[in-house]
Length: 575
Image (cartoon, rainbow, N blue to C red; front, side):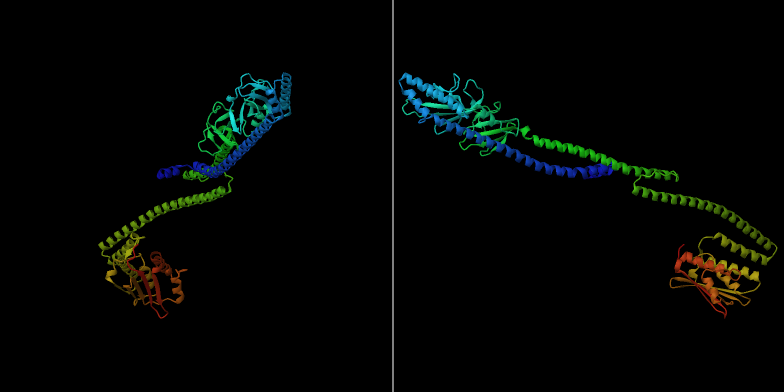
């Protein structure tokens, strides 16, 4: 897997790498910020919504509790020993018809008056134990059994109902109601007072929730049975509201978040909020984050594309320049990219291209010159061969005519020319150098018509040692030009000393002055004595070329006469 990823990354183009890296740089901080923000906002919204719902539940619970307390206080006006209850007790026990009619009118009027003077109370009625309606202040339904009403709570012989539809046949609103015994002292049957709340109260209480337009309320008795439901499809009346973990005040059930507030009397009020509505704020925030993510994504792609264009254009310029060089088109010049760094690099590339062009032209000129020199060399080789062949013919003519002197001169000259021409540019052995030196001395002896002695003493083990060509003849030539006569003598010694070859050439000529020695050792700045310094300069340059600073040449001479030149070169030097 790791190998595949590495291979894939290496195969990515520069454009894809720029887009990928820029996207990562943009989205990682954005993603981290989004996650942190989501957790924070989720917690804030969760707490805010729950606090608001609990606060509203608390307000509704207090309002309902206050309403029930008001009903209870109102009902106390209608029980014994209240004035109205005393009249009721007299009404039920008197046999005086006139008094009965008077009491009946008084009780009715006081019931009507109480409903108008008390904003809490609605329908108010006295009910006998068998369900007979004794007195009422408002019209009542013909069939309204109290046992069918949902019991909210029972406390000290007081039963609280509701919310339920009003028993007033002129109304269709939900109300709370109360039923309590009047406690008449002399009645064999119990009489009860039944009071309903004004319907407007219930409507106002259940509309106080401002959290969600789609919230619903449930009222539970002390056994968690539903006594009132605004969502009958899921939580009908008498439905047992199952709370798995007792003591919890909120949870999720049937796609609704529920929040509960329990009254001190044991009954509870539950607020139901649809899960979608509850998550509406969070969903809005998520949508906003997604929109921002899309915007950031588009911006990252656009910026990556702009960066790619800025990088790609100079690269294309360089590519065009390189292609032009490969086709020997050194005159091609690309347009500037208006990016200082790239333009500066392109300018340096143009300078390099100019230098390459000049170098190629220089090489072409040198190659042409080298070809011309090769032709000239061939021409020069043709002429010496012709000369050697001609000299060889002269030598044989001299032999045929018994001209020994001519034969000897031509033979030595032919050998010397052959050595110089055939070994041009190559190394030579000490034996070949000594043979060439011997032929040279013969020619010089005949040329100047005087006899001098040349003694050569060489270590036989050094004869096949390679040395630079033509290093002995110029030194001997220098000795001859320095005034040898018939008594002249030249001694040549070649031996080995401390891993070096020592070549010593001594003559008994007139010698050198200090200024002449200095001029020779400093590579012959000028010519002296018919150009003798040129030969010595050649020897010194050959030693420097082949041996660098490992070879040395020393001149020992004085006005008293005689010169010794000592050359020291490394042993076993390969060329």
